[in-house]
Image (cartoon, rainbow, N blue to C red):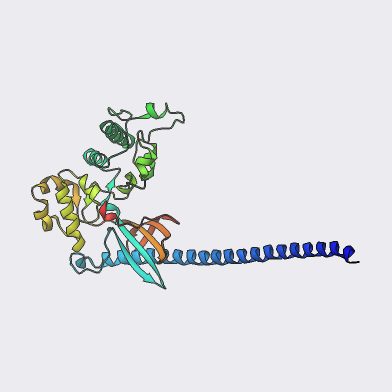
Length: 328
């Protein structure tokens, strides 16, 4: 009898072991799913919280812009309360999270439709553009930009008009008119994605150009150092001095910094202003201490009369670099 039951007991034992194995797999699967769902729920919740923080940063920035507009007398004071408009990050705390906001006055950039040739050329020369023959590349870019925006079909030495663009594998017309966006530059002869947008190591043309300034003058209170260096007569020493001066208070007149500009003021005067514009780029990043990247929003607004404003663009989510832009 013992010899007959022994195999049956062995089979039963194997079945029990298989059942236990299957149950363990099921238990571990449920445990893994529970943890995954918990992490997903937490990430989802934090994502929404970061989004709301970034939106709060946008609203705070708009409030600060109206404060600046209504209290211009405070802008020249060293202990001013208003936010900077040169890309310096301002950080606020809200509900256990943070928002980091940068305000950039578009008048601190070079207007692509109105910039004189000398400023475009100086900017290109200062950016160390990718390519072997820098002189040829700069000449091609500047001549082609000027040809794109002028109304005629006569191309400059290194420029391009309809005869060039129609010969491309996917032909199109030269604009022969103003740029509608800075991104339109990608259609211009010589401009590549790397030149336009930059990379992780260096910025691109989009960081220094605009079509919203509506003036050929550069706002010294908002210009990056790269834009300052594009101005005729500017030197690295003067650019550093101007950037350092405006960290304490905004410049209210060129006469105020005559000592900093020295003899270069005569050459600089036709190309600069200290008046703020009406169009601003706002970059807002909502984040928690354990996640600095957070959620990013980039908005472009223009201020209108009667305390009104209008969005020109609103992009989200976007990746916002965490370093300050004032070092550019």
